[in-house]
Length: 273
Image (tube, rainbow, N blue to C red):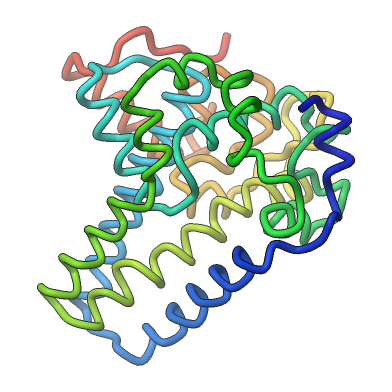
């Protein structure tokens, strides 16, 4: 599947199973608001950072997709499993999709460009576009390094298992409140934060660098996503592990990578020239 085939695959109808899945999670997230406890809230916040910061931002994105730094394999695997708790698909499909985005950013072949519509870039591409994560040829072509790792192949196939296991533990330990806040509300909130990187940061914000795409730095997306919202910086220097380039560009994911580096856990850390 090449870029023109990806573009032509758009608009072939909605995937009903994906729509129902998204609707069900959003309904459960709303239900969580009626079961509030401070403990459930704290669990949701903690798991939001574990899955969205350590897992997606530091793991799926800066480590696996761009190889902006290196960590021991055991830590890499742990971070990747944490990323599956965000329920955004397996690591191979996620990395392949994001690499395609960078290869064709805001051009024909970009899976989720706002030039095809703001709603499309935010969520529409997942239920009415081509499913890249179900195309083994695309995943092998754009993520051959991850496709050669048997653990990542297994984890991509069974990427929902850690979330199901977590759901069981939370329900047994704290009942419906812990389950609804620690899984459903937390995941839905994380979805929209990460989706905003695809949509909002290609529509609104400041452009420090002239790039061939529409990427922008958006401060509130950066705050919610632990630093992923400094998107123009990222597109200008895609392999750099640091996205916030000035003191006022808060980048918690970078601070954590620096902490890893300080303790000798992160090596070959790349930064913008």
